[in-house]
Image 1 (spheres, rainbow, N blue to C red):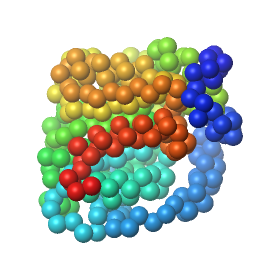
Image 2 (cartoon, rainbow, N blue to C red):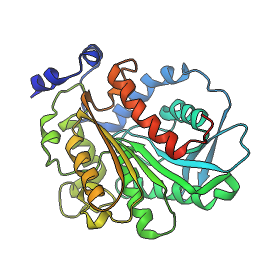
Image 3 (cartoon, one colour):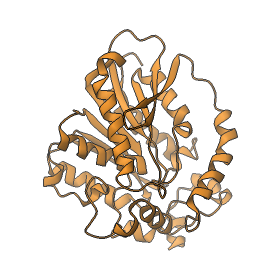
Length: 320
């Protein structure tokens, strides 16, 4: 159904997709990861400085690396967000999201802790969630020393990171050790079963698609993928309305041409049915992560506007 995809695609995004290679995760995922890292390295090195922000790496219990961002001059306890990068459970890094985290810290005045969780297929569930929860627990337990308001701790992530944020929020609620103020779920990857129409129809090879999603979930869950032996913390879309009660307020955005569209809309609906406030945005004509690839497109500016407004309300220091 690639013709359907192109017919519905925002014309401002089409030229970019013509230039990118097809996505193929069917082979050696660690080798693909290394190739991506080499390609990204010069681009990341060329990112501009973000003045007034300092970043320090910490190793937290569980041997998990967390990069903590804060404004250089900060006098009062601030909100904090545990940020979880995307990458289909197999890719991505703290370094790849460094500029993003610095920019958010500078603009909002909050503390951001970016977690370097283990990746599949070398590590499978529950490694990813365990690492994210260890980072969250460290952030909350050290709130006083880190200058964080313990009542304003948020969890957030994009794509796989959004799915891990949703799973970690469920885990935090169930363990009762960390109270979360909100969850920022940017086109979250939350359903391993591939049962929704959008998970089947998105086959265009140059954007995140059905096949890439299938390989990523198998790398993460192994032989358990699609079976009844998958817990909610691994695939939060499996949660019923009752399972979602007591979670913190959520923000979700997703594109019309994203394989995750239907699972994310359904998750938002169940959150609302469970009494959990949820802000949902579905942007027409955009594919998975397009707003980070075609920065100047009208749709990209609109998506960033939704997110920035929500983040300013929840994480801002009132001085941005």
